Image 1: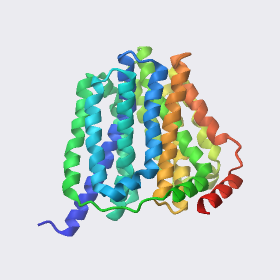
Image 2: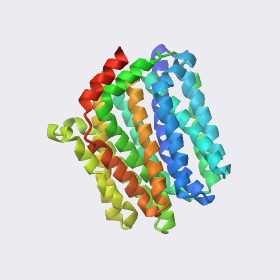
Image 3: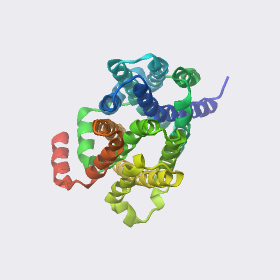
Length: 376
């Protein structure tokens, strides 16, 4: 019989492993979904709405995910999410219509919206390390970004079957690793107070996701349409996400003057607007890296404020929702711009992402009044 210590270690390892694998699958999902939709004859604006609608579900469900975990338990919630994801990935290549792809996108993002808060709760309950958790999903995202070009070139049925099957062993490990502990359910008043308190910084996490979402959804389409080398997709994604990860990890040692200039991250996104017009290794890498640094600054500044407020399910749920909202807006704006020209899709998403953090809102007065209402 395994000792309690061994069970805990195994449980944490399984949780970190799921975080790693889920990050690989999630970063691959939007590019593969977009390319599949294009290949079956769906237009750019519809592709934007397919990805955006799914992300909207993520935005709405994430703050309420603790409700599912409080009823089912975190392990069962995570297991159900993984099972649904496996079925969704296996089904996707056989779907051809806009309605069917919208439905599968909604189901997939709904599953991720339940999975991530459950994983965070599981790791926290077992005394896991936030740095180890960050390392697991960051390295998974990096690996996934490097594999995008490879998976785009595979037959679609093979690609999605591989991703679907990859999930199953971790589902079984999760079921065997732990019981089904429950978490405290977040109240609506907690969520409203968190939104009011974080309003200024939620614009930063929104901008981070809007820029990334537009690129993930439309850069593979631009590369295919212009018959550019397919490995440029992985080069751009890996460089951008790698720069974001390094910036995020090193954020605490950056000069205070850099941290206080919240507009810097937004301004560093602007080189990404040139991405559709670049075709050389160095220009693509430089533009992507600069944008990745900007995304890292935006993400880290927003998350730093979440931790400064004490964290908790309400704050992390609202933070994740702002990211989801960015993933809604980025692909939709990019899709609408693509009806004029496919190359305008990414500049449109970048323009939105750059503008939102720079809007001159009277954050303090609004936040204070909203907090009073939420707490009253």
